[in-house]
Amino acid sequence: MSPNKENCLSREYQELFDSHLSILQSHGPNVDKDILEAIVQVWKELRLADNHGTIEYSFSIHESVNIIKRFNAYPQDGIEGGMKNI
Image (cartoon, rainbow, N blue to C red; front, side):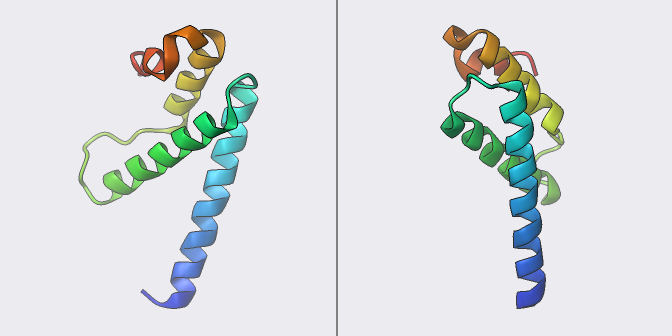
C-alpha cells in the first residue's frame, strides 16, 4: 500500500474512532473515558477481524452503545453485564 493510502486510512480510522467515542460519551456520560476508549479500540479490532474474515459476525456501533448504556445505568454489573445483552 502506498504511503498516501496509509495516511488516508489512518485519518479515516481516527475520524471513525473520534465519532464512535463521541457517540458512546453521549450515551454514557457517567462512564470513565478510559473505558469508552477501550470499547472503541475493541470495536476497531472486531471490524478488522471481520474485514479479514477472521470472525463471521460483524459487530456494529449500535451494540457498543447498548453495552455503554447498560454500564452507565448499572455500573455495578461491569462491562460484562452489558456484554451479556449483545
